[in-house]
Image (cartoon, rainbow, N blue to C red):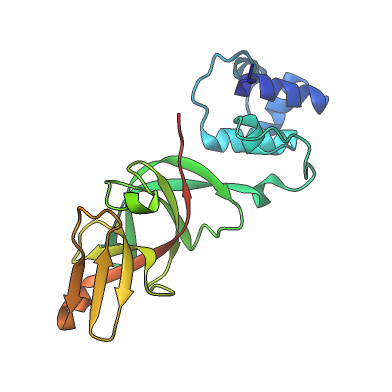
Length: 212
């Protein structure tokens, strides 16, 4: 039977020869709270808390959450260099001083090589990109940039102040085309002066899906 997160926390605490009080002191929680973590009486632990526990126990958050069975690999490397908690953005719009992130919808762990000052996580809404295997509710890591690196790259595009949406972006000197990968959606092409109402907010660098 697969171990629960509570069982993994207890396992790694004992492996590190820590008492519940000692672990609590490290993560700035009470001994009683650590006891509840290990007994399974607290559900839906926040990602930030899981990250703090993983750092204290010198294991990966992925192991605690049951995504990986690798316990001891690179155990002495700072966990913050491996996984970092990013806010999940529900809506992206163009703000007066840059991008406006609306409706923060929790947090998710991603590779720590992504710079939080230049990347954001967007929760996908809709089915316009299902041809690329990107579905409603999926999470995408986006590198904030004002242009695409090549024609056909998947990017977050904002049109005339609308909410940002994922599309393949194709550019010429005379036009910008936003192309869905779901054939039920027609491409949107902007020509001449209308090109100015299209803003690229960032390009997609990673996608994550949860099956639970």
